[in-house]
Length: 175
Image (tube, rainbow, N blue to C red; front, side, top):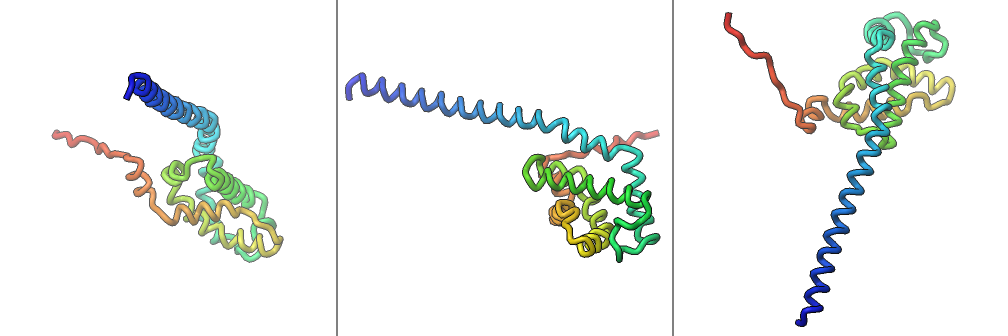
């Protein structure tokens, strides 16, 4: 084997290595750019659930809705203040479901943050939503329903374990 063949082989290996490195760096930059574009969306989602209005709507749905109103007629004809609670929460989870279904936000992030609340809330609202779909022949909150199915298939604890979350209980202090 003459020297030019060896040099060409070495040049080829170096070129392939440089190409591989360039591809890895480009993928990382794309992922970082994608994540930085999503950050405002995710922060807005999290901010919404911290509002007093959202908390009050969740409490109303959890504690009072089914005891005060039958689901037979859907939710469109309920009193306005009740519709506000249902729409605030239901459409919030429906919007999150859209983002998860279409791969805009990571499913594990959403299930780790809201996991147990999603199916519980869906189970309360489902009779109203199904009656609404039947009466008005629409597909209201289908993404919320899908998100509830996804959340029911796992637990927040599994999501947290897969993410590597660790615990640090308080120290025991002797008095």
